[in-house]
Structures are given as structure tokens and as C-alpha cells.
Length: 158
Length: 373
Ligand code: SF4
Ligand code: SF4
Image (cartoon, rainbow over all chains, first blue to last red; front, top):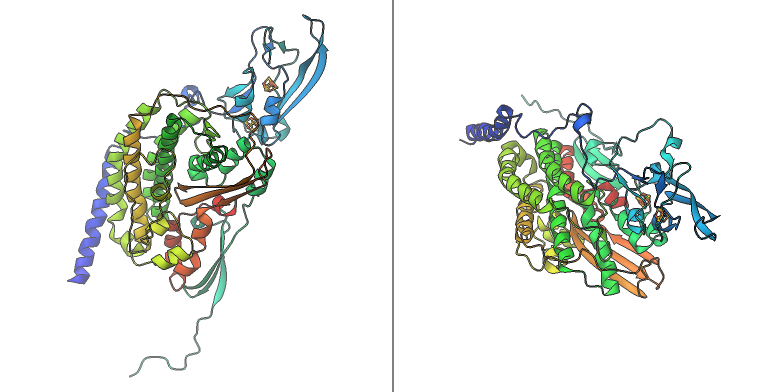
């Protein structure tokens, strides 16, 4: 009994399993989760909160909201952000004030933890949803987030 | 006529081979030094250290907010639960009571993490014993959970969604709907797991009676999680020391007494049902309220030693923090489930075959960065 019984049982469980796979074989198109990347690049939309890279939005007058307070630099666990700042004359008050010179961001070191963005008191930096970051030269991953010639948006105080 | 060869010169001798560190069955950079005689295993020595990043030392450098993101990189398949463990330790030390909303959300995401981890494990387990199909089925269901995480937390694996005092931001408006969709979807798919793999004769022959771990050994080796529970050792931290919202939900601790590979397999599959039921109990009544309580920008723990344990998908994770009252911990030690579980490997595989080693290791469900840290 046991020898043929085993064969019978083996075939039976095999067919039970194949009934599942067979069902999907017939209805394979329905419910497929495969993404045809990169063919679907044009209509591939990432979620709003997706952490791709840190960027600093500028308005049409080339103004940003970064005061150079260095809170993001302190919050960052691994030195990804470097703030180079300067004391410059504020045109409104005529007094010397801390101003940002360069907000340097090393994308290659970033762990996408989001602590810098939480720490920023003026919401000067935010996440961008871009994820295609591969380059041939890693120096390209070091970015200056404030655009050349940009200024602090009037009215932003830390 | 006697056909047996007497005084034969043919004899087998022990020899030594390396399995890993680059071997698909070791699930990461784990190197096993095998002493074998033919196909029989004489000794298995795990050689660790290939992915050691000195996370515990890095913790001494970082502030308490910064430590959290490092734990993502330990057991990356239960990253949310690791984060939670650190946050719970800090909150315990500060005697900070987090809002109910935070507790419930943490528990829901924690259980989703457990399901995601177990579905991935199920797929890989099938693959390790030669059933490639399961891999795709496991990943299909995990994909839905990863989408939920991506939408709410911003990342699929290394989420860093917890901060000491609560959550980094509130859940996404779609969160509840997506979780409910997932529950409905997964309830129809989970029975397929049993039809496809658990009932299969070949699979059962490969796993039943293989890699037996007795309850006594499970306790003395410090096994935890599904590995301990497969041997009848009741060690579910969620049950014995409930944290977050786990004291408000009803669920069963899955225990099997056989202690073999198949028992550990069954524990994990049935645990997915329990996790589903926990999520179902909580998802409809997430309390309103804040998603965090304000802490100082620089968190300083009082002088002393603090310990908190949680149940990750792999077992008991303990976080032990020694503080001297400054903004950095003096010492952080993680008691990781993978480390104790891998120490069992030699004990339960000696005398078996190489093929069984792979099946047994699959049910220990190791994640190598969790062992090495
Ligand atoms: S996301 Fe984290 S690692 Fe990256 S720059 Fe911000 S704080 Fe630093
Ligand atoms: S980005 Fe924000 S936190 Fe960083 S220096 Fe500028 S204002 Fe301060």
C-alpha cells in the first residue's frame, strides 16, 4: 500500500499546488504587479512622501528660505550637509547678519533619514521624488542646493 | 557468493568546505565553515564579521534622534520594529507618555512589517528547498505592504518613521483604505500559501523531522521568536511584556511542540493570520490626537541604565542603553534575535545532510546585518 500510496499522494499534492499556479497562468494579466520600468517612465509617479533627494525650492525671483542657521547640519547623523556661511550686511536693517553662502549636500552619503528636513525651522529644504541618481563620477553627487546668485526670501526669520 | 567487499581500501574522509560568504542560501554575507564527510555534516561554524559596521559604537557618537535611523540597517526586514524599540527605550527613560494614536499606529505598522517579513521569508523558504514559484507569490503580497509604507513613511525598507516622542509625521490620508484593501487581498491569498507549499509531499518530506530543536535547547541557546515557539517555548514578547497598543488586542501565541523545520515553518505562516487579526482590531479605531509629543531638541537621558525589548519578525530584540546624563549614550547594546538563533545552527544540523542544512537555515530566518550589526 505505502509505495503506491506515496505515489498517489505525491501526485495529488502536486496537482493541488498546480491548481493555484494554473489559475494564475490563465488569468496572468489580471492583477500583475510588475512595473515595466523604464518603459513606463512617462507615467511612473512616485508617492508624494517618497524620499529621493534633498532639494531646496527657489521661487521665480531666485529666492530661497534658508537662513543659514545650520540646524540641518547639526541634525544630520553623518555629515552629509555642510553649510558655508558668511556675515553680510542686511540691506534692510543695515546690520551685519548671518547669511548662507553655500548649502552643500553630498547625495552619495545621504541615508534618507529625513532628520534635516524635520529640523529646518523655515522649511527651506524638502524631499524631491527623483530616484535616478546613478552617475559615472561620484563628485557629481555633491550638490550645492542654493542656486548661484540666490537670496533669502524677504520676511523669513529663524 | 558473498558480494560485499571486505577490507576495502575505499574509505571516505572528512573534509572542509566553505559555504558563503557569497552564497544565495546563506541570505547575505554569512560564511559557514563546514566539516563534512561525504554528504553528512560533522560540524558547522558560522564565521561572522563580513558586514560588521560597528553600529553600537556609532550610537555612542550620535544623539538619541540619530540612533534611530541606524537600527534600520540592522534587521532591515523589521526596520520599523527596530526603530520602535529605540524610541520606546528613550521614552521609558524620559518617562514620556506618547499619545494613544502613536501607539496604535506603531502597532499597526509593526504588524504589517511582520507580515512583510514573513511573506518574504515564505517565498525564500520555498526557493531554498527548490520551489521557485513561491518566491513570486511572496513578493506579490509584500509589494502591497511596501506601497503602504512608501506612501506613509516615504521609504519602503529603511523607513525611519519613529522619533523619540512619537512619529515623524502623521499617517497618509490613504493609509486606512490601503491597509483594509491589503487585509481583504491577503485573506484570499494566505490560504494559497498552504495549498501551494505546506501541503506538498516533497516539501513535507524535506522538512518534517529535520533540524530538531528541543525546548530545553531552545531555552539554553537563547532562541526567540518563531524558532523558540516552534519548539514549544513560549517566548512572545508581545504576549509576556506588551508594549505600545499590544495590550489592547487579542491574539494567540502560536506554539508548536515538534521543534523541527516544519514546525518553525507552520509557526510563521500561522503568525501571519494573527498579525492580520491584530491589524483588523486596530485599523477601524485609530484614536484622534497628536502624532507626537514635543521633546527637547537635544534629548538628554537621566543617568542610569535602561532596557526595553520588543518582538521583531525574528524574535526578541533588546535595546540596552547606559547613560551618563549627556546627550550621547555612554554605551548601547542591541540583543539581536539573529545572533542567538544562528548559534543553534551547529547543534541542530550536525549529523544531517547538506541539503537539510539549507532548509534548516531557511527556517532560522536569519538576516545577516542583524547578526553582525
Ligand atoms: S536625510 Fe538624513 S542623512 Fe540625508 S542629509 Fe538629511 S539628515 Fe543627513
Ligand atoms: S536648510 Fe533650514 S536648517 Fe538648514 S541651514 Fe537652511 S534654514 Fe537652517
